[in-house]
Image 1 (cartoon, rainbow, N blue to C red):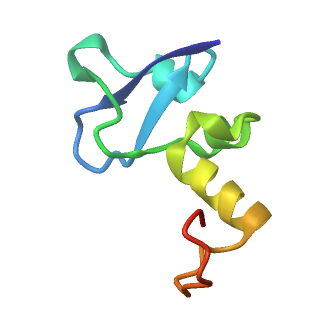
Image 2: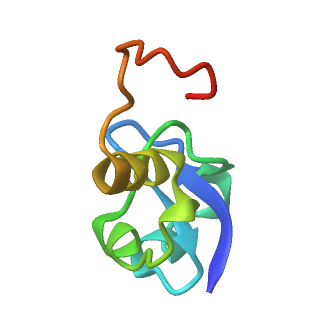
Length: 81
């Protein structure tokens, strides 16, 4: 189940956790656990579990660009576009 993101404050850790079933995240001692992502990426297992791209703004943008193409910077004369 998704939980508020947290990460370890120990040096050398480069991922955050947001799932209460994550064994690695559950093994972080309470005194080393910090709320938030710490600008770290989710663990690969937690990243793979994301089924809704709206969980990550960058995934939303990537999906939009893939679906609709990149916005045009050319002026086609139509003031509504």
